Image (cartoon, rainbow, N blue to C red; front, side):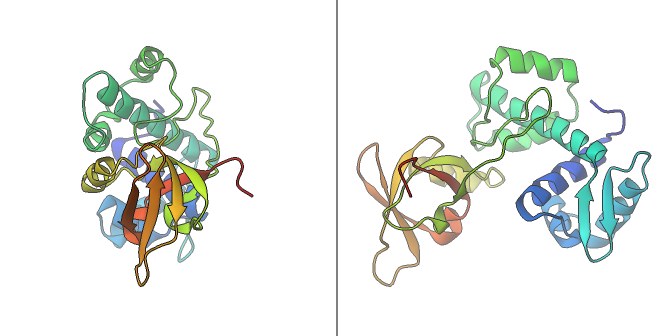
Amino acid sequence: MSDLATQSTQDYLKVIFELCRAEGRASTGEIAERLDVTPASVTGMLKKLAENDPPLLEYRRHRGAALTEAGERVALETIRRHRLLELFLHEALGYSWDEVHDEADRLEHAISDALGERIAHWLRDPAHDPHGDPIPSRELQLPDCDTLPLDEVEPGQEAVISRVHDRDPELLRYVEELSLTPDAAITVLAPLPFSDHVRVRRAEDGEAVDISAAVAQHIHVALSQDEP
């Protein structure tokens, strides 16, 4: 673990990394919402991290934050430990996939790099956590995910569920009840008339399932290779 990284620093850098990966930069409001703190607290922390030696991020008022190379390294170290812990809790200790996120949040700051690598070895160097999110490699490389939200897939397209957002345990339990978990193959169907739901057919049993667009946007899929 980097000597630069206090628990609070790790939390900020991890969130900023995830927001930047999705949107390019992380705004003060988005960071505040994710960390459940005030925008004023975020602004103070961003200035502190930008003034660190070496700087962990670049911050401009009204333009948000982006990580430096040093900040990205700390973020990826934290994300690697977090996702390894999630999988270890799930595979070794029998935690359900809706329980592991909060538990890993607490533990990721406490374990050493050496323990993290022992966990990785025990898990046989996994590529993904229980929710389908990629685990950074030992070299802190994180592959690009060529996926898109389920609510953006056109009717008639076949896809495989890649990952499900992990921050809402109730959502995870609901998705699991519908058997729409990572690696499940589906076909997107035309929605029912006057419906704002997304309708999919599970390849496993051929059953059609309707889910709200609000849920579908949290399920990411990879289109089948034979799709145009």
